[in-house]
Amino acid sequence: MKTALTIVLGVLLSTAPAWAVLGEYESSVSLDQESLHGEVRSMARQGYSLHEITAPNHALVREYISPAGLVFGISWQGPTMPNLQQLLGSHFTQFQQAAQSRTRHRGPLVLRTDKLVVESGGHMRFFHGRAYVPGLFPPNVPVEVVQ
Image (tube, rainbow, N blue to C red):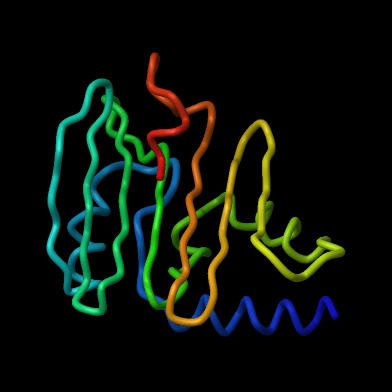
């Protein structure tokens, strides 16, 4: 069963475009816009900034940026899964291990540790999720902003 999950994850990850990297710098927003062929809308919020990229296939990626310029959270929704390996960067191995060790394979995938939170779910033609690094949140910004 673990082999089947690994193959499914591999197929999903290899077919999706590149995204911002969690824990890395904001500079990836323009690359994301190019790979999605989407439009970027940037907004200043209290304590952080938000970049929304809307793709022609109606996929929406939100990138949450701290005042230090680091991506502290990412959320997505759309007809396909994003490239989680690119999106999670160095955190992907931890996510992959959690996904493979699940005993229940139905329903949303939830990973919560001190260093990473990933919530992902959906069905064909509508996937959604969010990922964030608790230690990168700007002061006075609640985790609920990543949605």
